[in-house]
Amino acid sequence: QVQLVESGGGLVQAGGSLRLSCAASGNIFSPNAMGWYRQAPGKQRELVANIGSSGATNYAESVEGRFTISRDNAKNTVYLQMNSLKPEDTAVYYCNVFFYRVRKYDYWGQGTQVTVSS
Image: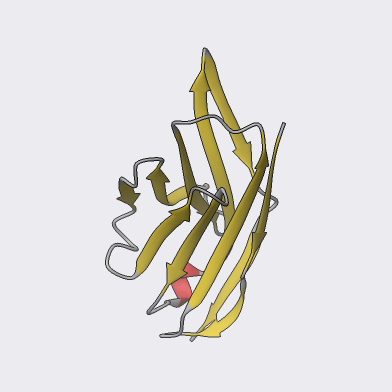
């Protein structure tokens, strides 16, 4: 089993910054991808960014240039540095890790609230 513990959410004014962290523990196999999704009220969950074991990254167009995802493989931790935050970034942010071992294994954190005031 895999556990994901998120931290770093909160309330910030537009233009501000926040850094999210997610520490994974348990049986995690490589290669894997770690990432962040978000879900705003009344909307579907969407990918924000993810990063593979090798460091390859993928960003949603809406956050490109403002958010930076990184990971520490030794600590099984993924980070999301969020700069120039906008009110439309307000959502619950969920950490995710997945890997393939015969089938896909997909794990989620409990979510952390990010609120950006205008």
